[in-house]
Image (cartoon, rainbow, N blue to C red; front, side, top):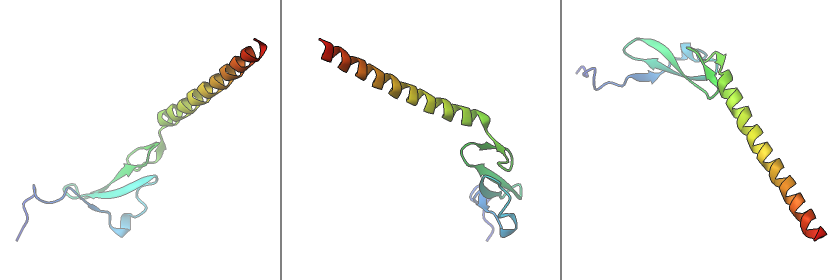
Length: 88
């Protein structure tokens, strides 16, 4: 018996013919539109995940820089505190 459209899944696995459709992501097949779509990996955007998301790259880099700066400040502050305690 036919299944009501509301009950059917909106997505299916992509057929083998589309296994390489997404450059940096996972392919899924849109049932109602009868076409493939991509779920992009982190850091990629585009219909086929073909573009690097530069904002994501910059954000990740800035986070690493912030952590590195905080660690450096903590090390310098600790060294200064030790030096002050030794001199007193």
